[in-house]
Length: 198
Image (tube, rainbow, N blue to C red; front, side, top):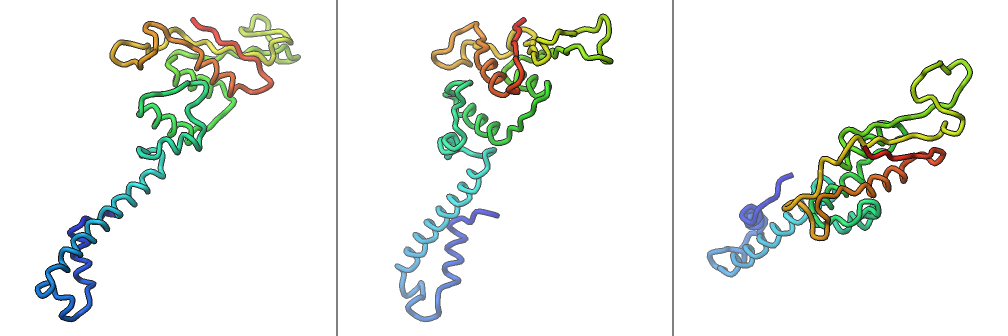
C-alpha cells in the first residue's frame, strides 16, 4: 500500500469536483487554495495511517515503544532500566517473540544472550537400576536428581567500556545478577539450579 502525496490528492480532488461554473478553477481561484490545503492534510493523515500500521509490528516500532512496554511489563525487573532507545526496542521485540522451554539449550541461549558465549549445562543423574554404569561422569546421588548447573564458561564478551556504556554503569565489571535472575525465573519449579562462574 503506497502513501499518496499532496499532488496525487490534489489531482484526485479536482477530478471529483462536480460540473458547473461554481467549481471552475479559472473563475473561482480560491477553490485551488482550498483544494491544495485539503490535499496536504489528506496526505498528512495518509502518512500517519501508514506510520500507525508500522507501529503495530514490534519489529518496526518507534513512536509507541512506551505503550508496548506498558503492555509487556517492561522494563524487565531482571535486566533493569535500559536507557538506550535501541535496547528498549529490542526488549519489546524479544518479549513478544520469546518462546520458552525447559531444555538445557534454552538456558544456554539465555546465557549467550547475556554475553556468555561458552555457557553449558551440566545435569546430574540419580542412580537407577539398569541405567547406572560404573565410572559414568555426572553420576549423582538421590539428593542431586533435580539439580543442574549452568557453567558460564568465562567472562562476558560484552564488558562495559568507555564510549559504549551508560551513565552510572561501572567500568571493568560484568555483573551476573541479570543472568541469575533470568535463569531462576525460567527454571522448572521442581529443580534446583546452581550457576558456576568460571
